Length: 98
Image (cartoon, rainbow, N blue to C red; front, side):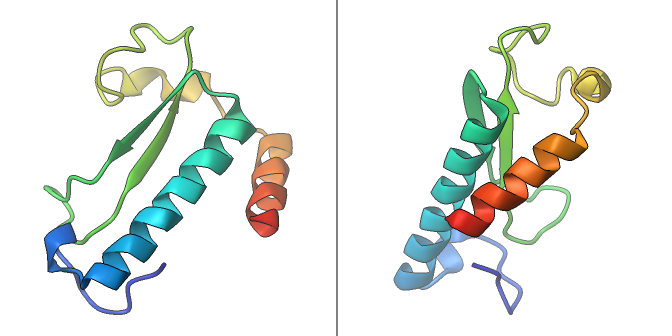
């Protein structure tokens, strides 16, 4: 679901739109988890910096410095996990199938 108007908070969405959005977030999470073979998935909808409804879907790996901590704590090591051309192709394929 792509919001065509500015929405700031989940509770501002009509019920049907909220359910559709949450279904989309779950589908993205399933696809990303499968594509990255993640140990854990983190979902965040903060909006403190960009006051527009959006979600962060973050695959976590066991070999991260501390996978139990919040994902931004160690953002300086994100480059350790580059997205390869193969991973991008896999994500495109998986999303086109879902």
